Length: 554
Image (cartoon, rainbow, N blue to C red; front, side, top):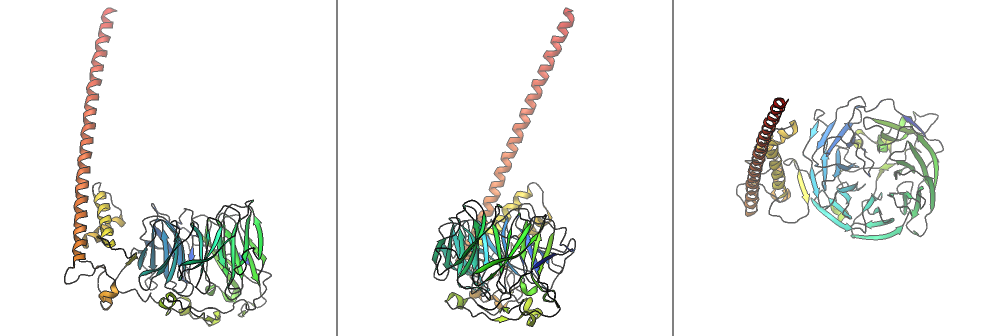
């Protein structure tokens, strides 16, 4: 363990400049809800049906800032996470059972909409709730879903690297700072230490007595210990509490701190350089911060507000203002309409001088790391660099994922299960069915018109190769289209095209039958209307006759 400063005074300061006039999604999720990188802020966007992510540049701290919308998911967004190395690469999970990897163009600031992700990950059978990038190997992504499965994705080589089943659904999943182990808290009140490369749960132990959701965070890195884990949950009396565990002896916690009796789970965030632990609960108006040192945790201070945290996200420490002694910054969503930055700073007599004790060396991100060595069991050595030595290129690494070819707009990564219809053909069939349905009513919005025109333009591109682009050698074709047209057709291609034509014929027959049913119902309705009119006329005639008869008698 390294020497870290004992912070006695830590003050918070909320900025007067907001990101205002936003449309942040109001749907509640188990994640923080906001993701931050060195250059961007991302959050689920409020649209009908869900499935859109809004991305704002950090420097656009104004009213109605320009928003880049990532459109691709077909259901609500449950989690978003920026890559720790590539500041423009973001992963998103959704209720549509898929994970999508996006890249935000950093050069073209005029782009307002992105529909083609870098790749699509499919492998879960239920909605995907948790994502977490490996902090050292930047092409490794972990995910967990309601199907009680943990998937480890090797995005560089287009495959699912490992898969592991857990006893129950996980409520949190975190990598340690070395990127070798995962810790996950389960709904059965246990914490599981997972070795993904061995595909096994190394250790499990009971953590909290309460029945509500629990969260966890590794207390390791520069100021921690590789065997320490922090958990937040509820006691038997529904009091919120946090516990510090030592993996060498999990029979009892190192310490347990009771906090309050609020109902929302506490979401922890850890600054591994100086040991600051931030605790925020959704719906709370305050943010508590503690400092860890040699197995002890003491409270430093608290940010208080009358407006609650609806969602939040922490900025990477290397982007904080070191000449104001800012050691952390959280972006707070208060009303689903604006995002307010809140800075945490330590008062110093000469803040314009670089304070080396507040900014110890941080992890140096190297974009040249690959996933092969990690999958083979080789752990990467952690290199560190001082914040004052960082350049702009170090803060905002804009190099593309080295595996993404220029000839592809998107790549679908899923289980290697052979199917008669490729996933691309299924996507085209779903689009065809949707637009044929809307065409009957002549109802289109601008997005649907664009997708329909793109669908029609793809009729001449039915020779689709479903093999890996590495096997085809398409990397030399810079200007190639997303659907590569070869010289001849294989049997798989013919099956795919015939399946697509068959689906088209089935859709046409389905809508023809539906139109016949509608016409029949309309005819029956017209007949009933005519019968009602005849009966009304007969009743009027009878009434007139009775009235005339009554007048004659009088």
